Image (tube, rainbow, N blue to C red):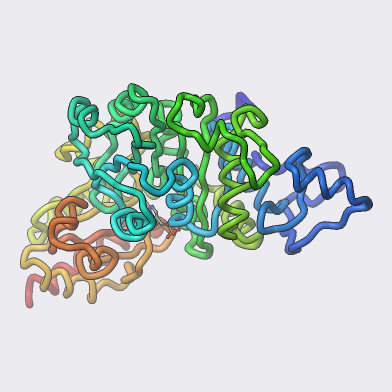
Length: 426
Ligand SMILES: *Cc1c(COP(=O)(O)O)cnc(C)c1O
């Protein structure tokens, strides 16, 4: 399996049926597991052996999905969570205590900005937000003794800024910090951040990975090999009182971060992925590579089409040669994903007419599934953000975000043409 290509891993990794077993991963819809003797259960509780004893911690169906994503990202382990939001929250809480400090690139998904700048801030974490073009020297100046990580999105939603991941990894590693990368938009098919120096990858599997808009989910993936005993992470090297003095870096050398995440945070906050969602997400993920190719193809064509339209003032898609992100996309991404943004002449009002007139594309608060949808971030996903935060996230008031689906490209172009014509006549 180690040498399999991403496509083969997408189809087959995570679940290998035994002789006569179901070909498709079964849904283990059970909270509990039966054991013959007390010692087996005691050993499970002490993390002395692997197995299942309560679905809040681990479940066979979820376990298969975790193994599939870990294999596809090239990591040593993955922990599934109830949502992408939960994945990003736990990715930080697993290494930062109240009073600790995180550096985050500002061009983040709106939900992540709110999580960091409000909710986790109230819980005691401090954040420094830096622009994507931040220099190494600027990061050097921000790092404090209590800094615990650098966090960024590989392809920012919705600004579509491609992370200069090698720069960020160098900046993080210089100070013994892990680089955490939210890889939701590229998916492992378009980019594997571990190859460029990321240490932890997070996902909202609710997007392309599941792909059909049926199931919310998240994933935290560990690359392995990060030195958690470098002095910045006492919780990894000091005995865990909640596990009879277990020491993560000593007792779980291969994947201390993932064991700690599951044993402490998933256990204590109770936010695992549900087996049915894991099943849906895993089945969806098995066609990821085929879908992503078509998402990229359709988005490229629609971006080129909109660029020519007289009612369109600008188009932002990293796959366009004119895009300032084009070079970075060429460097790190196998395709520019299925999301593009554009501005309509006539601003927010004209934008509303376009949105309301579309027939193939629907207005939906989602991205990255097989049905084309549109969203006006300033009045929808990003409405909790103030003007400065909007600007930092790269969201202008005329910005329409299109998540290009898998319909025929001719139908999509015709749909946008008729809607733009209506706005032009208004
Ligand atoms: C959607 C999204 C999230 C949040 O994921 P949910 O599954 O909706 O909780 C986080 N990061 C990015 C980049 C996203 O697009």
